[in-house]
Image (cartoon, rainbow, N blue to C red; front, side, top):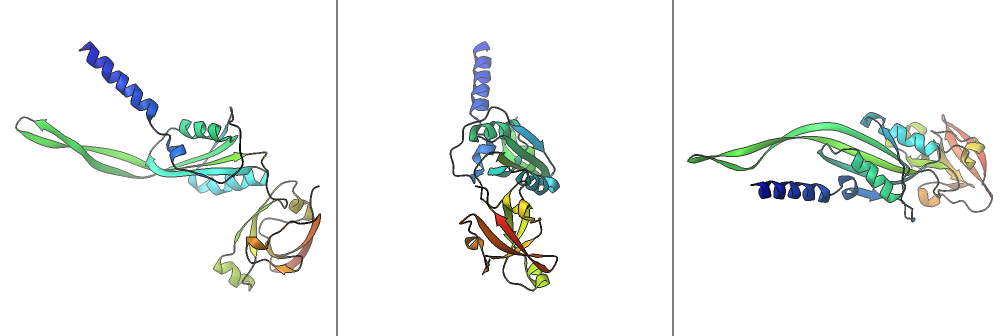
Length: 225
């Protein structure tokens, strides 16, 4: 009997130690460079409603996004996210978790005398997300993040091209030039901006035309040497 108990405990420990890390299992990497694993990670716990707001704040402070994890499962301890962040070289991770539903399922049967009864279990499921950042990684020279215009924005501004700037990085060439979040980038050196392939940063300076509150504004961007 004692040997059986030891075997069960050993099996439990083995299974626990070999459980895959869900934050690694469903990880999507965005940064192509090689990073050294980190020892300390700052954890920012947010609600799903504030997820994007905190992401943009880190962008503004000059952090670069390394990758992202997203999955729906029973609740997993944030230690998994922290361990993964360290392994990929992140120094900051934003974590959010939101309850979605409870699932009931049958996992087998148990004998009861001459009959059998199903074994039912319930599992609370959560949308779980993590964004991994590093402060000092190479980014674009301009210092902004952008997204396509929605149909409503195109109609409102009466244009069918351009990219909306939703983050301007602190102390970047774009901030020094006077760009602000919400500007719509419509031209670079006189050329229309239709997609990200139209964005270039050759030379030491460039002239941008943006649409701000419905009015065109020209700004001169001087790149850091």
